[in-house]
Amino acid sequence: MPQAAWAHSAGGPTDTVGGFVWLGNTHMLASWDHLLFVGGILLLAGEMRRAAKLISLFALGHSITLFTATVADWQVNPVLVEMIVASSLVFIGVVGLRGRPKDWTWFAAAVLAFGLVHGLGLSTRLQAIGLPSDGMIPRELAFNIGVEIGQLVALLGMFMLGDVLSHYIPRLRNPRLSHGALVAAGVVTAAALTLTSGGQALRTSIRSTSAISASWRR
Image 1: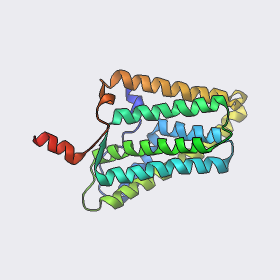
Image 2 (image 1 turned 90 degrees about the horizontal axis):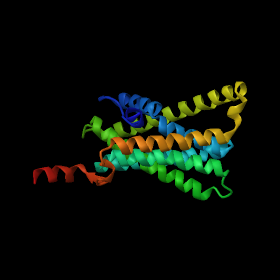
Image 3 (image 1 turned 90 degrees about the vertical axis):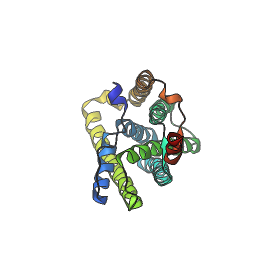
């Protein structure tokens, strides 16, 4: 369970721009908590046009912070980020259990906020792989493109799988069952991270790499 809770490891090192596209793609397909959140948006939206807008907001959020944090060389507490991502599953599950919002503005703002948090964690994982100072921005953009490709592939797969399963298992057509499962997944993941983190979630959230190096020199 603790190993499964860490759903944002970004894989091994690579040198080429194309390699970073593939890295972003595989990372997204392995990020089950991210995909559950996006799937929850798809389920809650109820129509493809609204779902596309909300998912685009989420993608915009994590693209902004992924780029900014990587270029600025920020280091983010990964445990805290993972716990917030887990709480996002609880959030969308509870909203679904209460019923679709009448006003989608506040929900869209929350989706954007969760996207910003996910981008911070993703940047930290990407920096852990190692980015060359020469050509860093093209590789970061390539990684982001790979993430979006992976998200689109996963969405298509979820839509097709859900359509097939709901046809053969009528009980799955009940959205409350799916929203309840999202709440359970978020609570279990957050609990697993809390028990195995050793208090790391209480440490400073964001520090620049230069600040960390300076503290070591002192």
